[in-house]
Length: 309
Image (cartoon, rainbow, N blue to C red; front, side, top):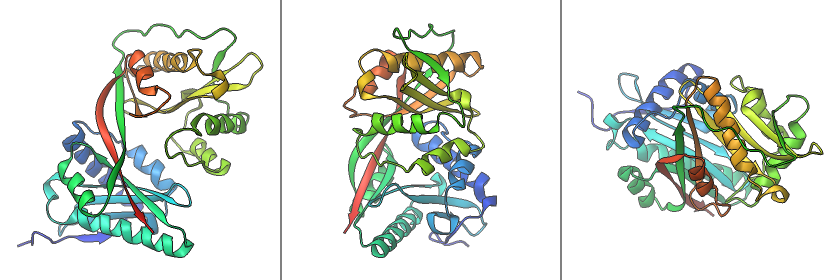
């Protein structure tokens, strides 16, 4: 008979990707009300990970996956992580084992670099067992993010572009540097923003799921990049990863026009569901902007943090 605490923590192999996707989908359904992951999400993420140092899975005696976690270095001093435990396998110590593994790896990176590390992890705000786990291990909530969405059951209203601006799809081989610089400027004043290197940022455009048509770039009359909406089409929805407008172009309705352009394109492609995540305390008023565009909150995620000095 299997003990209540019998399980094995190990490193994953590429063959585990589908099992991890199914596991996270089951956790999402339990904690958020619906799955929020597809296989391409796992494959895209793992393409930039070292599975031997950044990712863990937990399996039971039947070799079924019951836990998963990853850790990535956002900057020299900030580490970001995520973990989940199959609902039927909770209260067996699996979550504690995963968090301990994350902390141990964070301590290794701190010792190797000599730089204190802030270890962050995202937790569904209403998932009480996960909240207790992190708080009992010395983590504290530092920020809250809303997931917002819209279902386009009818053709959306046409986008209204401010005079002198145009929106066109991103062009590979031509737009990398200009869009990167606009991204850095647009997000420099966002909470806890970690500036990626140009090379790291461009990697996003090399992923198998990347499509130029879902990166909408707004330009002024002189051709300068003024703003952008960077999205990715999934099997179940269009997910907008970033919406940004450079400082000198703000206050003209450009962000709303970009959103409306994305909505139009998604509807025409046959995908009525559009979703994004937003910092609930964003000082730019992004949450209100998305409400104005017709989007509604689906659920909330808390960012928990612990400093390893």
